Image (cartoon, rainbow, N blue to C red; front, side, top):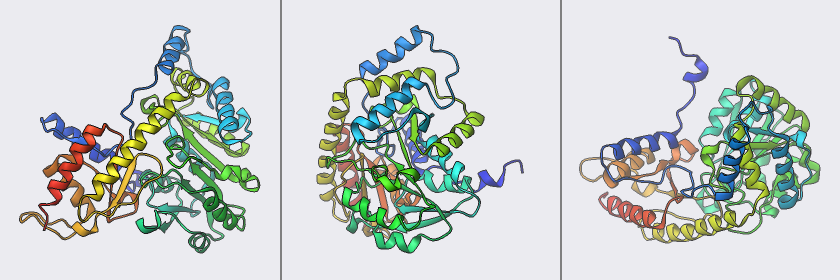
Length: 396
């Protein structure tokens, strides 16, 4: 009776729910391999930790400016210029408590009640819930594994209309690992040109975990630039998930709106974390490349292991650290005691019988899929896939 409809209408995060359930089993002494969370298993690079320690010693213990320290925003502008060829001013950067807050604030800043927001599916589990918070209307474009989970210009044109206010576009993608090429983005851009009131929210948090070489952003298309919001941060590429630093690079009016909103919600992000993030962008980048190469080796391993499991349909992800497998073969199967009625049932079966935590595709808008994170050691991955294989073999 005390909870608002706004909160009652939200779904719980399936990724966090599965991670919590696996933690409960581990607390009971069960040896669970957790492939549910999108969190690098690497520790934060030493030079970044040293910068945080230095910031403590130098008494960076007071409130930070709402949009972030100017020095960090300048460092982000430098990164955008050096890596992406993009010119941004510090006034166009807003630093937040993670990219999740950044995306939510952009939606709240631009979406009015009844505005439509386009989500290519599979999508990250939090996107639709954020749209709900903004009182927007979801318009989902489905994709499938046969097309590497990428939307086509034709699909996009059929979905856009005068009510469309925004599209959230994630490349490299969570949960699929798909990476759109320069040519594919340019073809989508040609469609978006006919709908000038649509804000393009480009979630690029996995930018540095890319196995095809080139990261291409909608913001690099000059005539779209003034309605593109880049969302990025240090969590994935620099193994800094717990530091909680994300940011946007946006048209100035959207940046100001997000800063205004943030000033009423959280104010500035952690002062110490900001100084660490500054060191991440200004310091040597070999640590980023070392982690990317490790993830690529793991990608190759899990694709090979998954293809050895009869009944799973597998593609080759080109970025991020997820394998998104089609598992409809196992829906309706039984081990003699338990019937698998959905991918959610299958994920729970793998957890309880195989002691491997995965995430059902239902929360990602793809009900016949499972997401498996390979952000863990190769030994853990070999152990997990052997368990998955043995557990699925029980289903007939």
